[in-house]
Image 1: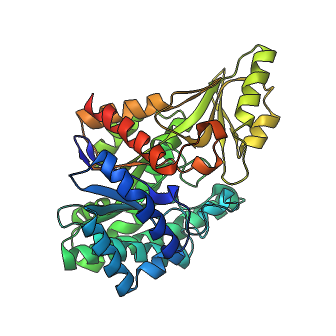
Image 2 (image 1 turned 45 degrees about the horizontal axis):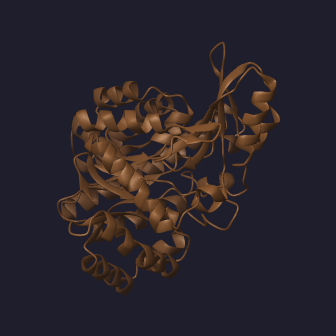
Length: 403
């Protein structure tokens, strides 16, 4: 739905179903209820998540025509897509496999091209459209600096193929589409600094001459074309886990002319780690209730003397909970954004408020997407029916934007 902060929606990765039939069934069951509550008269956007299998199925002309008619009948539109998870995302162990196949592979390249072809068909004429994607790969799959550098080079070449695909779509249809790179803990691109370094030293370094030659444009124009079609997905949860300075990152993005394709509005868990041993044990126990086997729950601990301790998953952090050198934990668990406290634990909701305040005063994107996908694995006390959960999330964000 259109808000003063941009087009606001939710990501349909909240719905189980990896083939298009099941995913469409979940949309048909839940979306009308959500829309009637949040936007009964005005159109409501959808942040569409398609697995590889579902993207192949929806690419068929008949299926696409049926979906377009359903969108029309329900006063709905698609303007952003989640192209990060390639395969199964519910009822299976995901963990680091969420990155597979990664950007070093043609499977990831072909899947993402297919998503953009679908989005070009669905996107309203007056909107730009984006697809968010992984931060190249999972860094621990590459055992040396040389291997990591080669992975960055290969991934960058594939992303430049996407840029060319999007330039061609723009030239033939006039529609502007962008790939939105989503840094996250333990990705090859994890922090704002790593994203900026990759964008300048790999993407622009390899891409400007290539695009200039292919499209017979100046180097300045080639740089503008790359920046138009390759953007950042600003996942608030991911940046909050890394204790990143939101205002500084957004200011640097503006200064370097790098666009934000969308803000993914999501919250992580956090807690101060008390020096009192019994109190710390209670905090450890509180975190342990979120220790589940489906998704990666990376933890970044802030050290008292500065710096961080990084844990690849929550069990590793729990095993080191007595580490007295740290004074705060932040854990990658997408908890509901409308809640600030979870017993002894808190959320990074204040980071969302800060980013939305910047967006209200100096808008830096037109796409806002709530991405809380962990409802099935939340503790029972936090669960609600899916449609009611989504409504609560979107109402909270909408209220923040109108304050």
